[in-house]
Every structure is written in C-alpha cells, then in structure tokens.
Image (cartoon, rainbow, N blue to C red):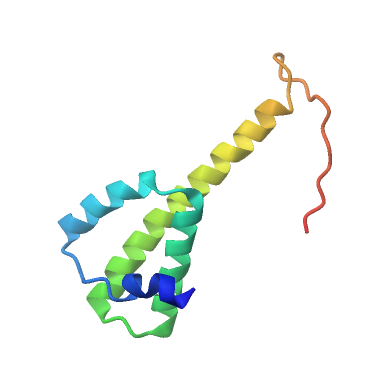
Length: 100
C-alpha cells in the first residue's frame, strides 16, 4: 500500500488558493479512492515527517476528504432506508444486520 501512496507523501506544498482548486476534485473521487487518500494523509501526519505548512495543507485536504466520505456514507444509508420503506414510509422487510 505504501508504494501506491508514495506520490501522496511527496506532494508539494501548495498555496491556499491551489488547495481550494484541488479540493474541488474531491467530489469526483469514489468513496474508496477518497478513503485510501485519507488513510495516506493520516499516515503522513502521524509520521511527523511533514514540515508545518505541508502538514497544515495535508490536514485541510484530509478534512475535506473526511467530509466527502461521511457525505457518501450518509447518502448510502439514506438509499438503504428508502429501499427498506414503502411509499408511505412504513418499514418493509427490515432485517437486523450483525456487524462483523
């Protein structure tokens, strides 16, 4: 996994306006790609190797990725709940799922 994320770790520090432009691309990422990138950012920040400005930029991008992932999960949950209810909003064939 480290090899796939090596480009992320060497990402140049961008001025704030460039980060805003880059954040716009987050909406186009799949949930899995956004999560993978977020995991890479967390690893980089936890390593403590990033200079301060790069760490701030990474944190900002990570926060945007986290929000995107949360929104995708919320949308998926809403779709599942819509499937499990009829037109009047009454539950239909609900099943308890065991986490695991």
